[in-house]
Length: 349
Image 1 (cartoon, one colour):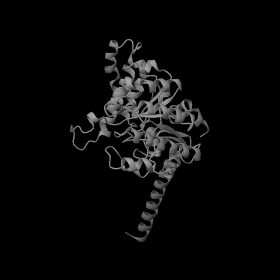
Image 2 (cartoon, one colour):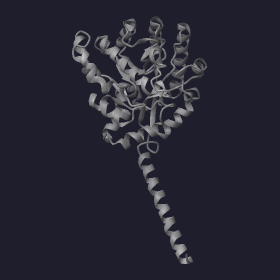
Image 3 (spheres, rainbow, N blue to C red):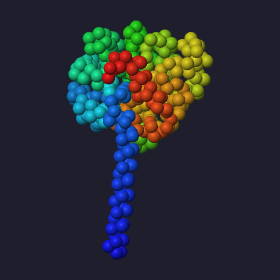
Image 4 (cartoon, rainbow, N blue to C red):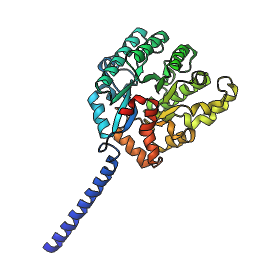
């Protein structure tokens, strides 16, 4: 190769590399206009925190993910800033709070809620919180609801789909539902794996989070609806995690049983499912979204990340755009407007 050829080749190569870099930069900038480079506007309705008092209690327990043991407020804020998230509503995740000792559970719930309230006080425009509840202790839960709302000013309540081998919808929990209905509560429900199904050996290496969490969500939704709690307590605004688990896909099949529950479901199952909200944490994929879109309108779908063990806020937002399943106006509703309508305090975030 002559010197002239060599110079020509290098010039072309450098120009090509410069063009590629510019294109990549433009793509990043284009996405950034909706995220960190613009004023943050998203609201992450499914975002976890792990105060040290909780970490000390849950270390070594099943269902604990390592990322939740090293959480700090700074890590949350860093992720939010990168992903254009104005505010995150934090909640406790697996393995939860109850491990057999009700007194310990009550103390742990109070400690987590006071920590969350202090975080909101320190960063009022960046955080909200769903108060942790000491179920299955009903009396303690009623007291904690009062303290969380009246003293700590919680944005709502956080439940798990099941507690040992009882699910939401269990008649024993009806006094709790009555109180939440009286308060027009927002209730965010996180999946777990019940004792019955935590260690099933159907596929070695496949953990409960891959399949059982979605199934337990479906059990809990079914329990709330078929017990009559959904119609009995219409003021509760339910948010179900992970696009409602497998319920959207199975709704038509499960609805077939509603004919035998006319008193509990006078308008059938589907009409109740359409009243609920569903977050997209762990469900930003075409299959889950297609099923959910067949069940509810976009005004019932909410942005969520499952941070820190789930994806980053930037990853989730970018994936939703790459799927091309929502218009920009729909994305605005999912990523902010639906949450603001449900939790007006976050309007200033």
